View 1: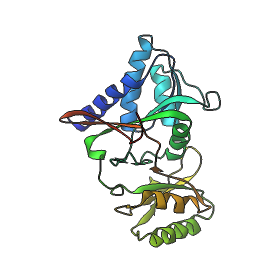
View 2: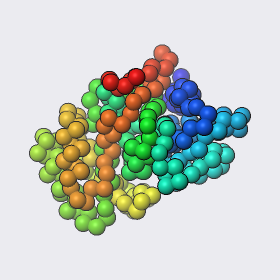
View 3: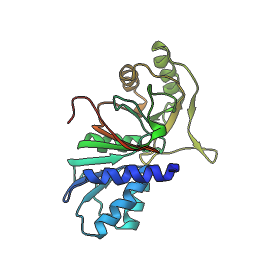
View 4: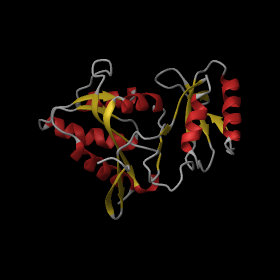
Length: 234
């Protein structure tokens, strides 16, 4: 299978977790978009779901394909969120935010009873950090916030380039009007400690470490589908 086919197969397996009548968080990114396309086919065949999108990009695709959408204020408690990830370790800790929607993705995931992550085999790692960690920050005091992130990382023995994400020469802006710092830390041996350190910085709105949020990861590879479950979850 090529990379896209792996994403499609992971998305197809995730549909097995979707039940009639669910309130469903719908993720952002290329793998999540394959899920939206397959979900739309089921909706056209009579599956009733109410979706809450994690980005304007996802919302546009859902509207185009006929998936019924609501805001998180209208549906503040969700049954399930299905989303992709940039990296997944074997404890189902994630790095997310490559698509720039990490804050809304985390809010939606936290409002959900369960989170299922879908990805191709290349996203499964032994230790998080090869993918640069997205850190969503307030534009005010950006330089001070970046310096604070560097110092917090250094106290944990982490270094590497921390770059402001840009598109066409302009600072990337999230749906919430924030910027993103992409931190190339390399291996992150203690994701929990880094999460706490970043949350203590006032200019950091949110970061892309998703810890104890995903219950199931569906990984597609040439050998088929592998389903991983976080220890302590049925």
